[in-house]
Each structure stands twice: as C-alpha cells, then as structure tokens.
Image (cartoon, rainbow, N blue to C red; front, side, top):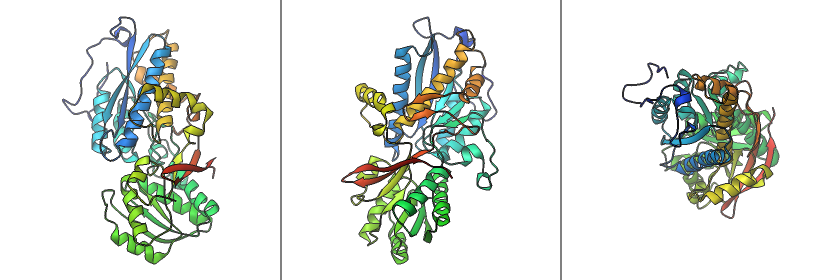
Length: 402
C-alpha cells in the first residue's frame, strides 16, 4: 500500500482499491497494468512542444505493448496538462502519486515546473524523467558552479543534457563559428532562461567575447520597444535570449523592425516551428537544441516512421526523440524489476524502479541512453540550428566537453 506524505492534500488523489500488485489485473484477466504518468503543457502557448511530448510517450507505450516488451505487463499512459505552471505540475504529481499503479512520470517540459514536482516525486519514491529539463540545479544542486555537485533527488532523471553544456556550447559556437565579438544578453527571469543565459555568458567571455549589455524581461511581455532601443544603442553582433519561443519570436521581429539587423540566438526553448510562425523576420536567427536532429540519425528512422504511421495530428517537435527514450527508459526499468522478481512486480515496485533507472542502458532513438551519478544523461550532443527559408536547418552538431 502506498504511504502518502503530508504534502498530499485531502481529496487530491484517488487510491487504487487493489490489493497486492501481483493481483492487479487488467481487463483481459492475465496482465498487470502499469501506468506511466506524463506531465507537459498540452494547452497554452507551449502546447506545440507539450503535445509532441505526449504523443511520443504514447508511441513508446504502444510499441512496448505490441511487442510484449515486459512479459505479463500492459502499460498505460496517464497524461496531465501542467499549462507550464509550477503549481499545476505539483498538483499533477500529487494526483499521479495517489494512484499506486503509477510507477513513473515522464516530464515535465519546464525546469521551473520540475522544481515544484521533485519533492513530491521523492517522497513517494516515484521516478520522474524529463526529456526537456536543462537547468543544472535540478540534478547537481545550487552550488554546481563552485564544483560542489550533490545529487538532489534520487528519483529524478533526464534524457536532455544540461544548460551548463548547452549554454556553453552556444557561447563557443557564437564566438568560434559565427565569429561574434560583441553580444547583448536578454533573459526572461525564469529558471531555464536565466541559467542558459548565464552559461552562455561564462563561455563567451571566457573565449574573449564582450557583453555589451544585459536586460531582463517578463515571459509574458510582447512589447519590447524599450529593449529594442537599448540593444540598438549597444551595437552588438548578436543578441542572445534565454527563454522560450512565445516571447522570443515577437522580440526578434521587433528588434529587426527597430533597426537591429543582427541575429537573435537562443536555446532549445526557442527551437520550435512556432517560433517561425510568430516571427515574420526569423530568417537567419539561431537556436540550439539538445541531441542531434532525429532526421539525421539512423537510430531514429523507425521512430519517425512509427510516428507518421500512428497518425498523430501534431508534430513530434524538439523533444519527440528524447521523450520516446525517456519513456522507454522507464519501461526498461520496470522490465528489470519484473525479471528480478520471478516475473511479477514487487510490493515496493516504485522504489525498485527508481533504483533500476540508474543502471538502464540501451541504444535509443537519440543514441546511447544511460545516466550518470546525478541522474543526468551521458549524451552531451548539442546541435546549432538556423532559420532558413521558413524552416530550422541544422548547422553544426557536436558533444560539448569543458
């Protein structure tokens, strides 16, 4: 029986009426049902990314069930919308924790949302694996910059590399490949945006680049006249934005309309087809994203074909491949636990699944999937993209090492 913590509020959950896990049967009377939760923004401004995450997780579960990946187990996805809001993400985690059939959660998209979910996840021994979170603090603690790295939550993992890697890659790419000497940095004051911008600044200045100005905006801002004036006066070679596409699209267009003709560059929060839809002057802008484009990976051919065949209305977007791998990692952890317990789930399945995650290793859609001692992916591949003729075109891919 699941022991609920005091963080769970009354009425926020529905407990299963089943007895031991070995007696939890699905409708066919022969298989145990394991629920994998999902938390992502499936409505609102970031829904393009969230829907791609949801669909890719569903595809992994469907493929596992068709193949009988875990003997005696049928997987089911329980997808919840967090609207990109931390408090909603926390509520969703609490709700999923209240169902003893849930053995893990894929998500969330946003690092700030993850911060609100991690403690509930830990208290309930419930694995949380994100295909998109990149803030280093989530795994290595607030003092990682001082090289005092301590794993924060044993139940938290991710298949996306960190902003320590991504921001540094961006700074190096800007200085060495784009030949940028002067950069203006803007961030949206959110956990992800601030961290990404900070890592960019550290690497860019380390290599000899100069920061000619900084500015903080709100992620809800859409009028950037004051910012445009400041950037124009600073005469940078590049504007770097730490944040997401709903704001960076309008920002880029207003910068160019105001006479700032240099490119805008950002991270994976900007890498979406919707960025281009929001920005009539996106041509020439840059964004990085974790991993290599799945379209360029031989390991992703089946994923792409299966996704198309499944008939999803929405694109898999930036995190489709990493979401499939995150979901498959959970499935493999469940498989290891079942195989180690005479073909059945133990009563402490959540705890054992979380522990098994540390040893998961397989060749996934995005390449080799495994986790280090902090729960971070061992795959540090990053790709730089540029908008060209209305589409993101990959320009350079490489694993980043300090």
